[in-house]
Image: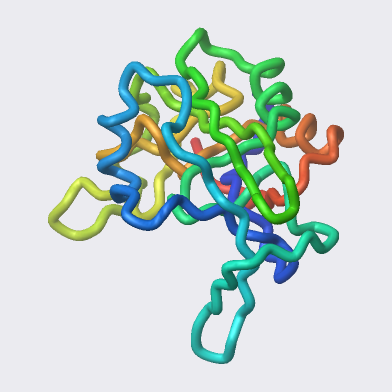
Length: 200
């Protein structure tokens, strides 16, 4: 691992669609236990166009397949890391530190456009003990992390990992090494943004 570490998030784009879970789907944290032992999401996610208004977001029940609407790191209503097969393969190819995650397959559709795509959600098997508790910023009086500060000696063999949290198995708080960031950029993975973070 090099001396750079990045938090990954969705790229801010007005053109990108959002993949929505069906109405009545349990909250994301409730789904984690329900998916234990499963390797496929038991429902489809439907692409919808979201238009930003002055004070809110307007979700259209139709999908406009504009350039950039469908990306490798697809925004979704569960706020889970929803990755294309291309993105999954880049991560798998550059994994270090052992076999500590598996993948849940998800189908993303737009029925009217005949779109049926396979995406993947990373699910961690272990919770990492990787933060410097003295330098990490917590919500006062709790163990909820606002801003983590990672220990180099704990992450030196990791290219891809998540932040310790209550719902750590599936989390959008994902981090990549400079090596993996370079591979994601090299492979032109779309819909992703990188923010540099601290460690010591």
